[in-house]
Image (cartoon, rainbow, N blue to C red; front, side, top):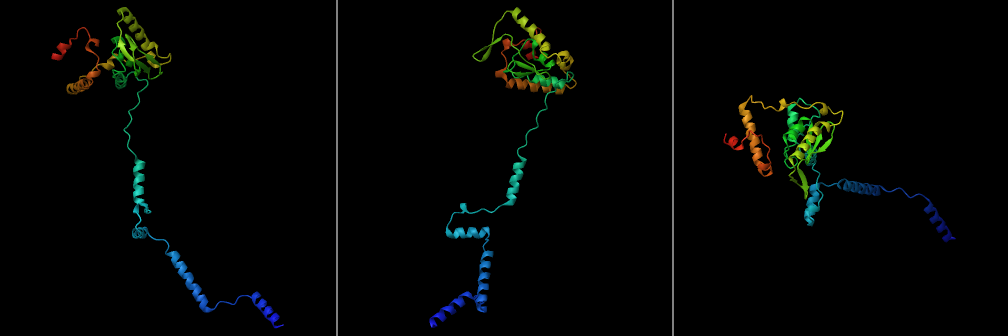
Length: 253
């Protein structure tokens, strides 16, 4: 009977709510929470503290986290955004302007590479092509700036092992080729091309000697440029000169 009462009392105590904690236990719990929160607040450490800790442990600094340098990042972004300045591009050639001397000279300048354009007879030389709106597009090839027609100009030359060599042809055949190309300077344009109707006047090529000093300086500059290209100049026996011009006499003058 006594054993049954003890079991019944133990069962009642297990079903009843736990007694409230004492004041001492409550103070101990609050202190422990303050310690935990203080440790959590002290968790973020500075970059310098991490470096000092790695030095104490003997770890290499190359693997240490690096601080973010915002000023250096901003300067690098400015440098990358600026980039190298490109030189201003040369303006494109005007498609049709027969009265502009500068545009005529710019078209003539496309024929200056002797590896792309070899000397031609006067009736079909680079001046005649440039006066009708043609430029040198590729090796012995001209192109119209307006209608974009292209034409290969070959007279007394043929390809041998990838190189062009002069070929001796009878004078009547060469004259016939010159006549044909002289006609093609105009007729090769499309029917509605303005260069087919009108080209540049010869007066645009007349030299102006209003300033003798400037003219002599430009002539000297051109002479020095030709001297620097001496290995690429045509042989003297290939030069076509006027009958009344004596090179020796001109050199002595």
